[in-house]
Amino acid sequence: MGSACSCGDPVSSKTSKANSCEDISSTLDLSIGKVLGKGAFSEVRLAEDAQGNKFALKCIKLSSIRHFIHVLRREVKILQDLYHPAIVRFYNACEDCEFFYIKTELIDGQSLKEMIRSSGPLPEDLVRKIGYYVLLALVYLHDRDICHRDLKPEHILITSNQNIKLIDFGLARMVEETIYGTVVGTPNYMAPEMWQGKYNKKCDIWSLGVTLYFALTAKQPFNDENMHDIMTNCIRRDINFDSLSTDSRICIEKMLIKNHRKRATAKKLLEENWFKELNSLI
Ligand SMILES: Nc1ncnc2c1ncn2[C@@H]1O[C@H](COP(=O)(O)OP(=O)(O)OP(=O)(O)O)[C@@H](O)[C@H]1O
Ligand SMILES: [Mg+2]
Image (cartoon, rainbow, N blue to C red; front, side):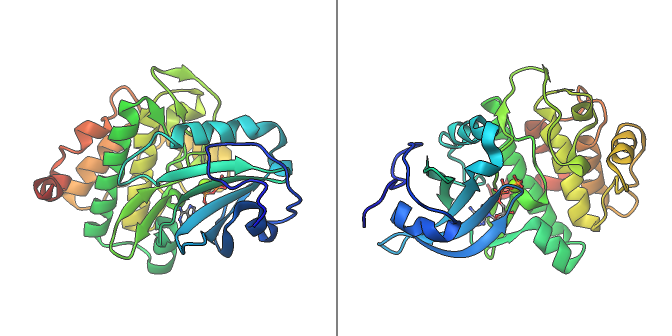
């Protein structure tokens, strides 16, 4: 098959006449299957190579991101060095004149968001396991000064045998110390200090706290109508933890400490009583 870009090497730039995600099979030497999910600017498709190996292929239309190609390159640069069982495995990336493609491990499962949407509050054992594996992933990332910056239920995938994987490093960046950075993320999951544009890796811990609270209760701690109310309430309002078990409450409360200097690190949180059983298994 004559391929303009075989997606075999890390980011290469070549041209082709692909006009839609459907056309890309000839461009990439992959056959393209169903849509696995959609993001704001991308479509993630099932893809299969000639040997029958399956992948996930994120296809981002270049015209929709125009001046933000550097953000995609940053996503690839960060992803390509990550090897962790709870983080999606990156294979390679390439682009043609229409699309930027990111080829990763296929995670055959559901997102945490889909699970909560279809089942409501999830069993505590499952939520504990999700919290534990995402914390392991965060220890790995934070030790490397990588901040995910968009941790939320859509970005946690769970397979049928309960493997937990963190995905979407589109907003990830290197953060060594506290930075004065762009205010980014998804409002409901953004830490108080993120709204103020001065934050560090601890913003991921806050987002995980909101995610786990949501998974246990199917309620958002700051479920407000508009962005301004979400922001002011996340900065000022106390969260109601009444429906949580003692151990989950103690742990999630430590993730949702408003002052990020006092908020626990991922490493410290793994020592919590809530994770005692899981720690003894590993
Ligand atoms: N490796 C994968 N295996 C299976 N499904 C995946 C995979 N990666 C992504 N998906 C599905 O596609 C959806 C969108 O993926 P992702 O969040 O990476 O896209 P995005 O365009 O970056 O989204 P955003 O709007 O957050 O920028 C996910 O919620 C998930 O359902
Ligand atoms: Mg996403």
